Amino acid sequence: MPERPVRLVVPLAPGGSQDVLGRLLAQAVSGPLGQQVVVENRAGAGGVLAAETVARAAPDGLTIFLSTAGQLTIAKAIGRRLPYDPIEDFTPILWLADSPVALLAAPGLPVRTALELLRYAKAAREPLPYASTGIGTNTHLIMKDLSAREGLRVEHVPYRGAAAAFNDLQAGRIALMFVSVPSVLAVAPGQFKLLALASRERFPALPEVPTLVEAGVADFEASIWTALSAPAPLPEPVRARLATAFNEALHSELVTSRLDVLGAVPNGADGAAFGAMLRQDLERWTRVVAPLNLNLD
Image 1: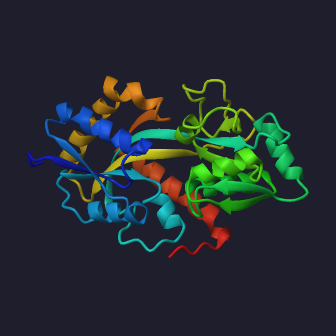
Image 2 (image 1 turned 45 degrees about the vertical axis):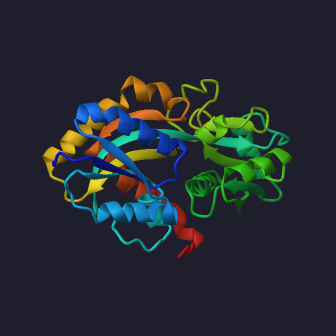
Image 3 (image 1 turned 45 degrees about the horizontal axis):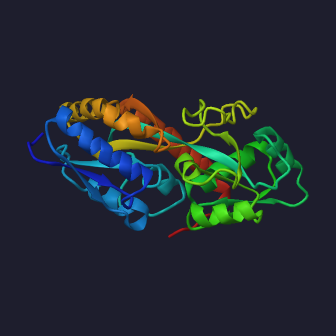
């Protein structure tokens, strides 16, 4: 691995929780890696430009990718014409972190728990409107997956981000929605009912909020994951060096002290586990998207 600064390409605009995580990791990893890591934000086309930049870079360890489902699994599942193969053109290095998604209901909806909401949505005379942060986004597909599994009577209303959706949820124009935990933490309490998280375990910063599994939805999990990839084929010694250094950075005080605020929990699974998750994630969202007839290109 050449002794030059490493470029960490982030497929998001500066300031969001995943961007902040990338910047913290870049700062914390310089010591363990022995090289400076410089963050480069490339947010165009939903991060596809960033992914293409990495896929076409030399596989020497000097260009790495803060990857998310938006550029890899969901992008392919919804049928976007990608200038790269999300599986074959990248080397999975490390599964960094997960941010659970929260199930919210409007303040005036006559439910107190996730179980009551599911029963209410199954028996609704008219479909309940639910918000997402856009067609084909994870918040759209997670609700589609849940509604298909549970037989919910719901209707999709896409928004361009969470802020407008929160306003309509508070006003009762929207009945329910999934949204990331960082978005929940940024909104004042009382504007919605926080019913459950779609995570395997309860989130440390919200210990009173149960999971959907606890509400009786067996094995239903969904999170917004963040991971580290590089161009393929990355030599194994380089992959191992990057994985070791970034795993150490992930568990450093600098990073762990901020994870709750960022709405994330560390993962640290190796490249093999991350690669296996990618394939499972792609299969899941491809199955969910199949009946939707999406055409986003």
